[in-house]
Length: 78
Image (cartoon, rainbow, N blue to C red; front, side, top):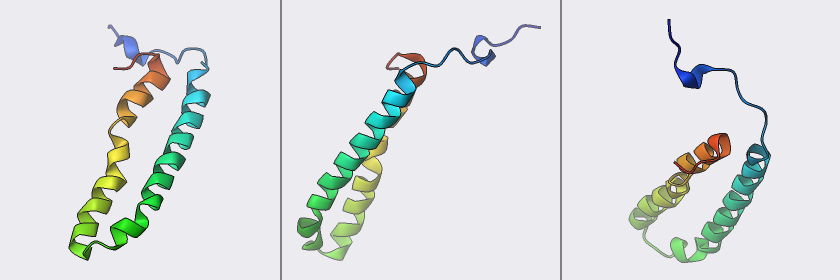
């Protein structure tokens, strides 16, 4: 019975995970600061324009997350 090669025991810890977590936190704080800085301008928009804008701004940070997590785990970007 053959096993899938990715189901083996985890490899030794690498520097990528702690550095990646710190970089992710720093990037989210920076992104949050940018979005908060836009708050006054966004507040001037009609509510029906604010809702989709906040939905987009609240989810757009997820786009690079998959590739970043892959890098943290494997050292490759994809």
